[in-house]
Length: 261
Image 1 (cartoon, rainbow, N blue to C red):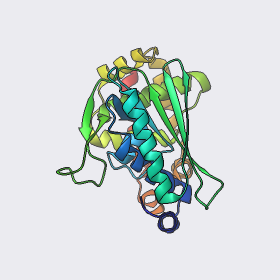
Image 2: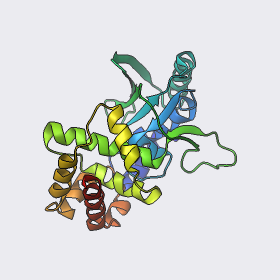
Image 3: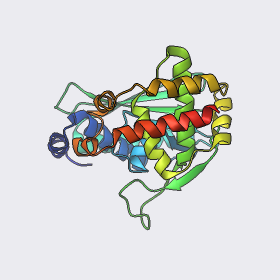
Image 4: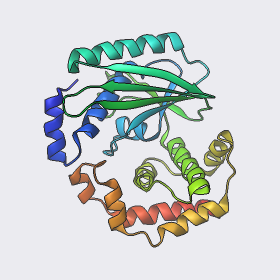
């Protein structure tokens, strides 16, 4: 693991809070040890950042827990991870799991000396995975590095659409940062409507055309400046300043309008 002082210097140069880079380093190290556990499939923003190379920092790590999940090996890997972080950074505690229905949540707490403590959430959700693939972590040599199970980009996109629909129906809003993720995912794979329908069914959600159209319409008056502020601090400043935010908004709106038809 990279020393905390070096990460803090890199964060200052990137214009992001040190906690973002520290959490990213912690998550990557966890994936190198715990992510190899059988029956874990990385999904969401963590997959997009750590595997598919998105510069947007992810606050947590979300996994699908498949039926062949090996709980004994998972617990042993968590302990190896904790000991490794303690050796490198001086402290690490793991809380949980706290379980509710099919969701199991751990928290990794690290005292860094830069703030009171750093928290990385790790969640396992028992649900079907449709398109798992094996990939190395971003930046690793594909010829020599170990590979972890991760959702294909089209399935991550389907999850993002499902989460946005669920949030829209409950609160009348979506997470604007997800628009950036959708744009990155569209560059990797085209959207798959049957897969989106299947994921919604897995989560017990209807394919709500009216809600999709409502989300798309809400993006019409949204300004690039609003999206920029939502992304500030979770993207390195050079990446943020180089974005075509109007294009991101257009592509997200077009995707949702197409799905609503």
